[in-house]
Length: 498
Image 1 (cartoon, helix red, strand yellow):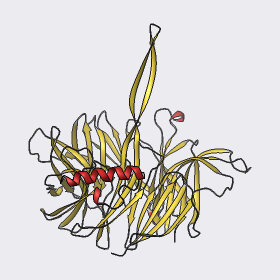
Image 2: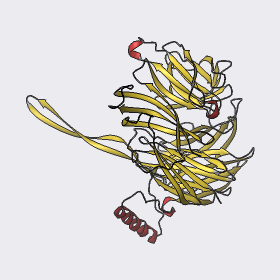
Image 3: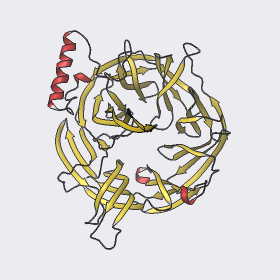
Image 4: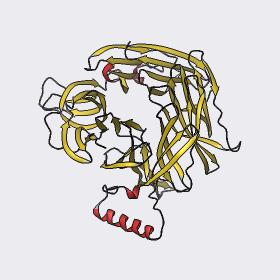
């Protein structure tokens, strides 16, 4: 399998620069303006769309919402405002291949509005309807004029199909092994082509996981296919599917021992119709350089632990926490990316006085997830692992939720990854597993005296050989008279990598 691998990383470290990487247009928006930028939606050759909301301090209780359109050279085209009843709160947005769909919901009465933004016509369309009230909206996907919503009331989980044209809804009922069992969603995605939404759910009897199933919902809002995974003695931690053709789907994920909280390794399985063809597992301990992110002492300690368990005939369960990405395919191969992380904690000490006497209390507080490394695996149609690559991460940011830092983009010529942590763009090219080229570029404006004090953001493949980086930066400039000495901005920057 001859493939080249291009990795794009943003890091707070600084390295040398290779000349062919070219910084292009850059846009800055002052974060002290009347509108706050809430998100950027990337539509490749059709440009980008920024969503913004009016500063609450200047807008009473009904802030205006705005969408700003830019072409693929980051030239502003126009903007439109969305004026909705203040009771309808923005719950969740979904970026499709052709439009942005945003779900606004009034939890008191169940009234909702779906706002559809078209980047090509720079227009909007609104769909209104009613569904049950008092819901917490946890998932939202759109195919055509059908929306699939995953919601909860306290501990009860619900799946709804919304007919956006008619403003009607119906609840999806999944068959359970026992009526009192609970259904938990572990993955929800729009499959390529936007013809189906996949729901990967697990059935639990109290704390015992009984089954993992993948349901496919078509443009009519019907459950068109259902697949139950036979994992043998293993427990499914995460699973993500992709359709190969009308009759075949492939599912990748992580597995563990029955009562383990983290993953022991990756699995691949395939279905032809309702028939499961194989269930292949790959333990992380068998990956080359899986522990390369550790210190030499840590690696030696881990290798001794693994060797001891293998001598006893036991399979090692590392209990790795992994943020799994959707499967991507190209040239008959399938690529699965996961980002490993672990929770961190800190101690907080407080002293209170009761009747003049001090009482000191120390508590342990969750301090975010530390990401360590990424694992990229390639498989053939039989689910056999062909290659694996391990990349250190260690981002400065420790999110308080499971985040996917890296974006994976696959085509017939290159496999591209993007990861942000600071203001340096790092590029690496691997050919058949060998590093053949690398370059790093600072993501700055044209002002030579700009110094970035803080930077957060991301980088994505834009179109062709171009990429777009965006996020927020705190910049200080003491040397240029025509710019502010201090500025806090949202930035977008186009980058060319030939």
